[in-house]
Amino acid sequence: FEPGAAERLAARLGGTRRSLGERSLLSSQCVLLANHRLDVAAEEAKQRLEEAEEVTRAARARTKRFKAEKRQDRLAAADNGLLARLVSGGDPYDASSFTSAHAAFKRRQNEVFVDLARRYLGEDSKVFILDGADAETTRALLRSGGVAADRIVCANPFPDTAAALRNSGITVVERRAEDWLPAAAERFAALYLDGCGGAPEPLMACAAHLDAATPPAAGFVLGFTL
Image 1 (cartoon, rainbow, N blue to C red):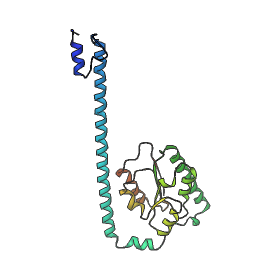
Image 2 (image 1 turned 90 degrees about the vertical axis):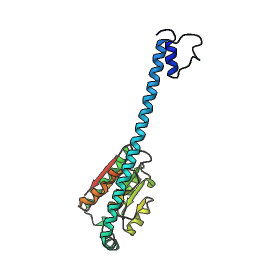
Image 3 (image 1 turned 90 degrees about the horizontal axis):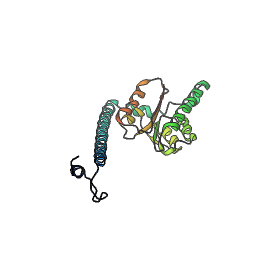
Image 4 (image 1 turned 180 degrees about the vertical axis):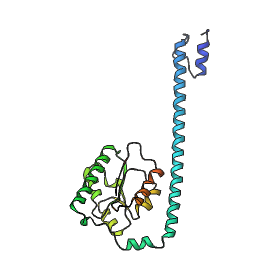
């Protein structure tokens, strides 16, 4: 550096002579200052990029939820009261009719889901489940000690079943999961789509939630049965 060049460059980079007194600024100090300013600029640019990406993800999620809502509106218009008639007939799910082998299978699936939820979810993560009046999955989650009742959401269109599930302290949406979940604004870290009916279409409709919402970064668990 020629005399005074380091000081002039440092001044352009925002440096001062307060700690130097009358001593000349060393070229190594100038290089360190320049590198620091470059690091700060790079960090600020990275932060701006991350913020822009978050805005883009949120906009895409809103668009997908809007499309899902419009799809449900079209389906409801074409329903012609069929769903209301089905609901009025009562919940066909009856856990007491299961064979011992089927009941054991259900318990084991609950255990696997609960273990994964306990291991990988954050403390404030929300869980969406499908459950019946026996509340087997709900009780399995609560027994684990890792998921509180206020973090569990279940969708069930049958009023009597919904009332039984609410007795466990969880949130119950009185709608079919395939109608509510794709457009839900909630961000779930775990989904347990326990279909049990042998029909994949309702579960595939529920899984559309993954396209419309961004799961928390702490972890994500997805389970399903047919």
